[in-house]
Each structure stands twice: as C-alpha cells, then as structure tokens.
Image 1 (cartoon, rainbow, N blue to C red):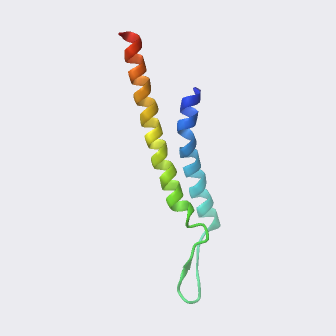
Image 2: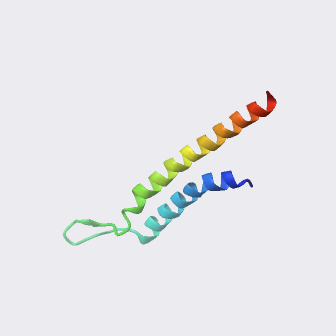
Length: 73
C-alpha cells in the first residue's frame, strides 16, 4: 500500500477508535437527572477526524487522477 493512502486513511482509523472509546466509557444518568458523559469530547473529535479523512482521500484521489493525465499526455 502506498504511503499516501496510509496517511489519508489514518484520520479514518482515529475516528473509528475515538468512537469506540467513547462507546466503551459509556454514560450514566445521575440521581438529579443530569447526563454524565466523561468521554463526550471524543464524539465531535471523531467527526472532525472523519471529515479530515474525506478531504485527504479527495486530495489523494484528485492528485492521482491529475498525475495520470500528465503521464498520458
């Protein structure tokens, strides 16, 4: 596997890992009705990693297409 694809896939892997960790830590409702979620910060962080991986894959894919067009011409 090429290094550029590995670099583009790493935010996707981090996104999956952060969602799994936030799910494992879990949440609880206190006696006063307040939701306690100790790993809440991982949920928006996983969305950020996911969208970064989409952008990275788009740049890698677009770069590959443009590079192939230059080689053909």
